[in-house]
Length: 485
Image (tube, rainbow, N blue to C red; front, side):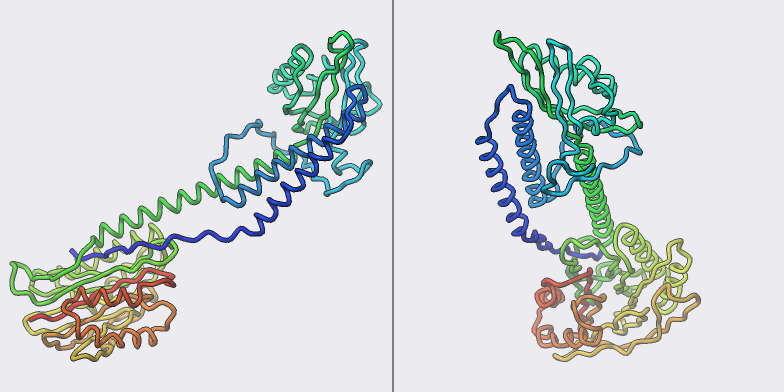
């Protein structure tokens, strides 16, 4: 059975990343500058203001680390993301606008410092002190007293309370710094993700006398990360779906058009009458499989069916439609249907399909007893005939695109051949970047090479060498038949 031989496609080259590299360099330089300033800042554990300033520098370094990682991901492209660390946020939570860069102290609500607050809990007096920013983060009335450590979990989402309790316990008993996140539910019902950093303050006897902390509203950051993750996952699923569809379409096409070349003999191993070869030239850049086909089939009456065609579109559905059309062509040819009538029936078949489609085709029957080719076409380039070192396009009978109009009629033509004649049937796109007329001229220019070729396969090889390079936007098929006797 006839079929295509797939060629390897060149790997797509990644785009340049010079601007991203420049941003990464700037982010790392800024991170070094911030770290240098942080090291120079005097930090008195007894001074809440200095501890708060030091914590803000630490937060800035954390964010620059995140920025560095995100830019690196942008440079490297999509990669598997780790599972979401934070629990899902209930729908309807109001957005928190990110602060503009360089927002000053005392900026209005929505700026950077309105999303970073501080607190200190005195364990000896059981008193708590909150900054005004922390009241706004937690949505509490500043006129109310600050919550103690025992009361703080009442604001926390129930699932996250054990996490907060464990962090505070480790800080007060084991002296470990606090660095973690939890979610709080504000009085208006909205939920905020809060990042907490803090340390114990030790007394003269080495015991813990108080605990201070800096709390930051990271809801916007978490939503942004979820958006990145969801977009990544969607892109990953889309690529998997594309790969699956491409694989299925390729397998379907190869099942219909298995790798094939060489001579074709009529039934019962009679004398060889045609030397046949064919090839499918794939599109560049991993484009989806199209609906191009070629076929050569020995018929029971000793004649040979030759056909090429193209169904518009790409993907599994088009490859499946192509297989259906090709099966219909073979079945009708085996039943003795002549090319004109065969194309008319194909047009009715496309007109009756659930999903409308357009197609073009050339169908021909070669009669070895009289060396006669009877053929018809449906909006398709005519076969090219090469003889004695020159070539020409056959005069095409009437025929419109398949599926273009109901009840269309298709004519057929007849041409006599002689030994040594070579027929070239091809689909659109064989000569990329050229009109149909210009493509025919380019193909006819290969007449001297065809005249010197020893076989049909040599002619196909010459076509691939000439037109198999870069720049093909769609698949193309070619079928060469040389009269041998």
